[in-house]
Length: 134
Ligand code: THU
Image (cartoon, rainbow, N blue to C red; front, side, top):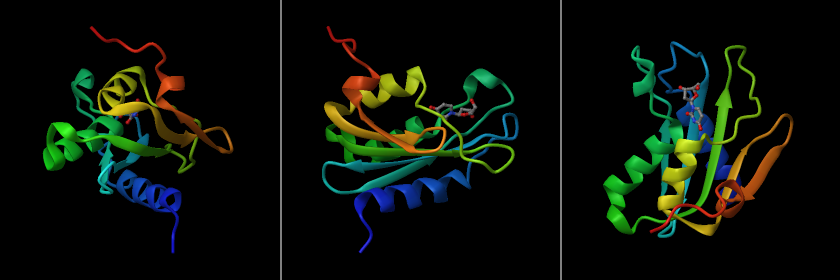
């Protein structure tokens, strides 16, 4: 049986093929495992008005919240990508995505993303330390 990591990787790779990325030619896929054991995926959706582009991570989270509601919690997330040459390159979640991920994460939520050659595995506390609260 496939491990959680393998499943998340496959799901993220699969959804990355659906990306709408005609401007950057950079396809991103994210797969999120929720606390109740569900997997949600999202890809980047670009727009000709570039500020309206939404990243893969935030689209996956949107799908998750639409299914589970406000109690949705991320246990683990895998983010992958393919550039215009079909290569997977180093790409960590952007600042906006880190903030939105933090909304539904614990400090120890596991985050996997692609490095130059290896997979990078870290956690939310490392990606967004001392995140905003009030
Ligand atoms: N992108 C993501 O989907 N996630 C990130 O965390 C960083 C950037 C997308 C947005 C845009 O469609 C493309 O990558 C190039 O910036």
